[in-house]
Length: 136
View 1 (cartoon, rainbow, N blue to C red):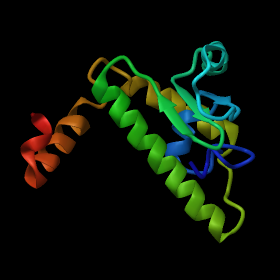
View 2: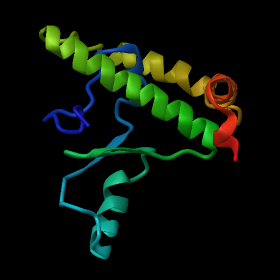
View 3: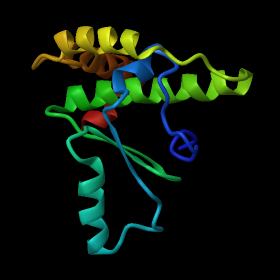
View 4: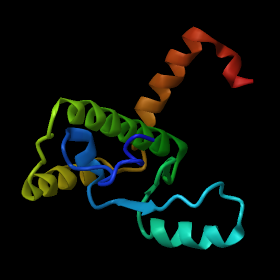
C-alpha cells in the first residue's frame, strides 16, 4: 500500500522491482469499488500487464496459474518492501535501462509453465508445519 500511495509507484531500484519495470498498470483511487463503471476503467488501466497498482490501496496480480500468481505477488511484495526501506535511507539508486533489459531477458527465460511451482510447494510445506488446517 505504501508504494501504491507514492507518487512514482514502483521504481526500478532493486533486483525485484526490475522484474516489473514497464509491466505495471496504475488505477487512481475512486473510493470503494462498488460501481460497475469502474470495472471498465480497471480493465483499461491494467491493459496487457499482469500487475495493477490500485493507487492509495494496493496491488492486484494476475497469472496463468496459482503458483505463478503467488510467486509474482511475493516478488512484488519484496520489491515494494525494499523500495520503502531504501527510500527511507535517502535517494535509492535507479537501475539503468540497459541493465533492466538484460534482467528482463533473463527473467523471460524462467517464465515457463512451472514458474513459481517449486516456491509455492515449499511455502505450502512451511505452512503445514504451522497448521495443516488451511487445507480443509
